[in-house]
Image 1 (cartoon, rainbow, N blue to C red):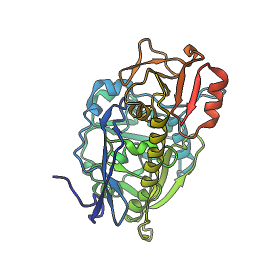
Image 2 (tube, rainbow, N blue to C red):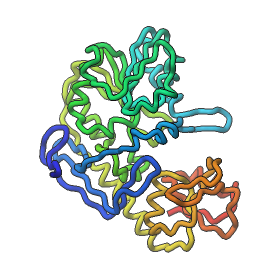
Image 3 (cartoon, helix red, strand yellow):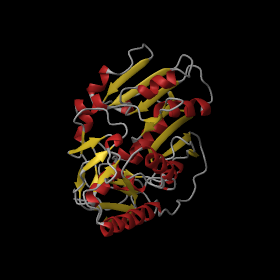
Image 4 (cartoon, rainbow, N blue to C red):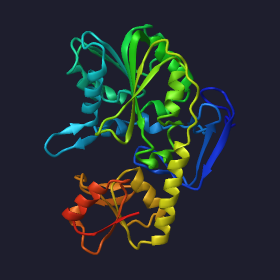
Length: 360
């Protein structure tokens, strides 16, 4: 039976249905040809009412393929974990003897980067799969817990809790926030990172996440627990919503009305209509992201292949179609540019490679 009340505040919800595909975040395989969510009429939280298993999180293949996202390769090598560690080091009250907990820590790469910036820090990570043990740091100040009961951790113990692309998968956000607040010291902080659907509306189509969060709905949840919320802007993380949360008895505010999701869906619908009107024959698609998967669906899976500058494995595939490097493009090839509002990148590709690069 589908739950029709809000997962957070228990208020009434409206159903949201659109004739748009939904995808999982591991390989961006199509889950459904239609999306279905429910939106709270009070706190504006959008949640997926269906039961989500996400069994790939428990697979060895998933653990083996976990890598840090490269944000810049040219003059200076920069990754997402490097940037997040730098942000945290900048805003932490102290850099000495801090106790850090990361929920869904994967291989512990972010904790390791943070260890380089802190003095005598203690780092604890949680995961649902034991396959991550192989890559997790072996230093004495690092600990990995598989499927732990958070209530068994020492209360008021951690200076910092990190949830990077984890909060949107929580099945019970209210219960989780109660647990996190209990674990944080009085002056403790949390860092939460989720997809920013304003900068990339296609993330609205992630059908395997439980919650769709925005810069309005996420503070709605956090402020009701007395957290002080600061949205962090960073030029390398524009497509992610980065929120720094401080513990304390902050005055609770009223819920903000939020229509960011609806506006994001409207943008995708317009792009879908334009794609169908163009009826591009034998299209190739630039990129191997959720954007690219979406265009593949709009083209009714008639995509010839995908094009990716970072393709370096022989016979590599995306959605069961070949991936080629752009230096293999021919002048007559039609390539759909799937990156959302990135004219700088498009211009660079047009100058560097052959092919007719089409923005929609």
